[in-house]
Every structure is written in structure tokens, then in C-alpha cells.
Image (cartoon, rainbow, N blue to C red; front, top):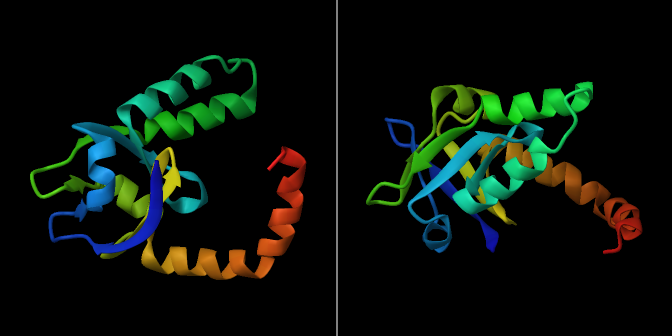
Length: 143
């Protein structure tokens, strides 16, 4: 399980260090893609396979389903950790997430999210203001 928040900077080649706590669970390879809220999603291969199997069951006749699958899969790419625990962030994904230099890497249970530092700080500030309302609204989900 991925937990926590870590601040890292991209190097000159666009590589990002993945926190040591996350590396073992990622194993030899992972999939990175566009995420929601203009962050990047990084999935271990087994989690990506499980998601892929679920997305394959979505009906092709549903416009929203087609859009979501296209969004997720068209931005996806395999990535491997190098010996220093870094991954290469492709330029198209860095542009999508607005990551120039400073990034925040967070654990979100079964996936890792990678945010630009500025977008993450803005997101947290907005979420803190509505955290009580969010907590009340998810009660209906059985949490």
C-alpha cells in the first residue's frame, strides 16, 4: 500500500526519484499515465492490469466510457526504475501535469500520484477548506 507525501525535484533529464518506501512495491516496472485533477498516476504493473481488465468491460456504446478509456490509455507508458530509483517523466505527461522542476509524490493506496508542487499546494488548501463537507458526503458510500 502506498502512503505518504514526498517532495522531490526533476533532474535536467526529466527524471524523478521515487521514494524508497514505494520502490519495492513498484517492482521492476510500472505504468504512468495522465491522472485526474491534472496529476499523474503511477501504477504497479499488477494494479494497472486489474484496472485494464475493469475498463475493458465498459460498453463501447457509452460516450463517457470511450472518452475516459482514451484519456487514460493514450497517455500511458511503461516506465522502469533505474538503479537510483528514478523514473523518466515523458514530456507530454510533464506538460499535462504542469511539472517543471518541483514535484510532490503521494501514496494513494493502490497507486502513486505525482503532482506539480504548486498544483498540490493549491489542491490541499482548497480541500482543507471543504474537508468536513467531503467527509459528510462520502458517508453514503459506506465509509
